[in-house]
Amino acid sequence: MKLIFEKSVKGRKAVQLPKLDVPEQNFLLPNEMLRQELDLPEVSEFDVVRHYTALSRRNFGVDNGFYPLGSCTMKYNPRINEDAARIPGFAQLHPLTPEEFSQGALQLMYELEQYLKEIMGMDAFTLQPAAGSHGELAGIMIVKKYFESIGEKRAKILIPDSAHGTNPASAALCGFECLEVKSNGGGEVDLGDLRAKLDKSVAAIMITNPNTTGLFETKIREITDFMHENGSLVYMDGANLNALVGIARPGDFGIDILHSNLHKTFSTPHGGGGPGAGPVGVKKSLERFLPKPRVMLKDGKYYLEKNLPDSIGRVRAFYGNFGILVRAYAYIRSNGWEGIRAIGENAVLNANYLLAKLKDHYDVARDRICMHEFVLTDKNLANGVTTLDVAKRLIDFGFYAPTIYFPMIVHGAIMIEPTETESKETMDEFAETMIRIKEEAEKEPETVKAAPFTTPVSRLDGVLAARKPVLKYVGNE
Image 1 (cartoon, helix red, strand yellow):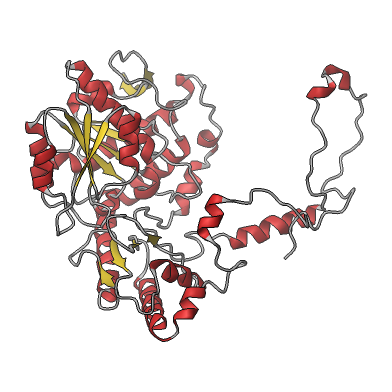
Image 2: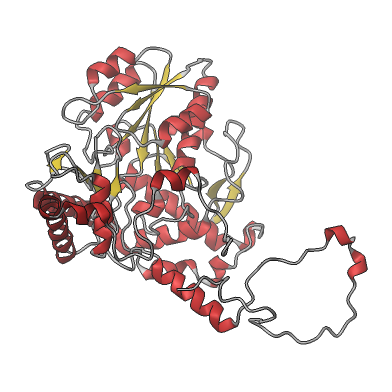
């Protein structure tokens, strides 16, 4: 297949415009400020359409096939949610529209906050943060502001080694020192290590529950009690809420602050860098620190309250990624409370079904009932076949590869999340393919090590691509 630059013919155009009926006025700008000739391909409209259509066919997403990306919940996105986000009154609403003409949008955001409060057991929410990591940052800013308000200077954040990798980055950005808390042999937080590192210099713990090995922290109540007895706060990374919704509420087991990835748990599977939404929920004692403005309701009218002197301030232009909020609202309303519970139940059921199919063929990092995801390893693969080889070979069978080499506390990790939206037949096919690759590793390992064979390019040198990326078309030079 030729590149678009190779199809270029001098003078060919994709569109024909009528001649200007007014004289050109180049004198309005100095020559040095005028756009120079751009080195762009000169092709017909037909070639442009074919070019982008061909590129789209090379992409892989949840509409193409199974996307078992552990820790990222790449589930089916109901199209009704897309329709809701494209309602003209939402899609074309300017963010500076006065409040009296934005009542529908403000009502949606207000009601979405109420739903999130009920689902997660929190007392107040902000919808401003534009991603999960952004929600983490806002949450830790609230932690810092809280201790400043009571005149305490606490400099440390505890982070379990099973937490998401963005947690220490968020804490460090807020000026905290990060201390790692080890996992025990069962894959949960080691309470002994936690006690040893907990003192009056610790502001909070950032815990991921379920954690990144796909396990629920069964001692979470003890952990939150330890922290609160020390005067510390508990922040929960809610990226894995897909396993909890409708079943367990973080606010009920002692969480003070958490974020939720709406684009994971409540529709709009993410990819390509966004957009996303990471609302932050807090308990009553921390509500006054939430970002401003906040959506309020008074005398039947919705408005944005800006007079919040204790707030950490605005963390996002306007009010977050509104289109994502619309999708999440539609998702929650269409499912209802029983449907929300079914999401959590089926996510856990599917993961355990797939784990049961694969555990006799692959080494399992934590051999116990999992939540919405689980982690295999390449420990017992034959002939030097590695996790990367398995991931590449899966592509040849039409599956997107799971998350690999994460979490880093598991050597050769293969992290799989089927989500609640995949059918038994799809999971059976995936399991059969994984088992076939395991057999290929034993009988014809070079096939696995050389994969993929069905992609436009063969296996790339990942290290070289990261260190010396080719960022432009160079033709035949």
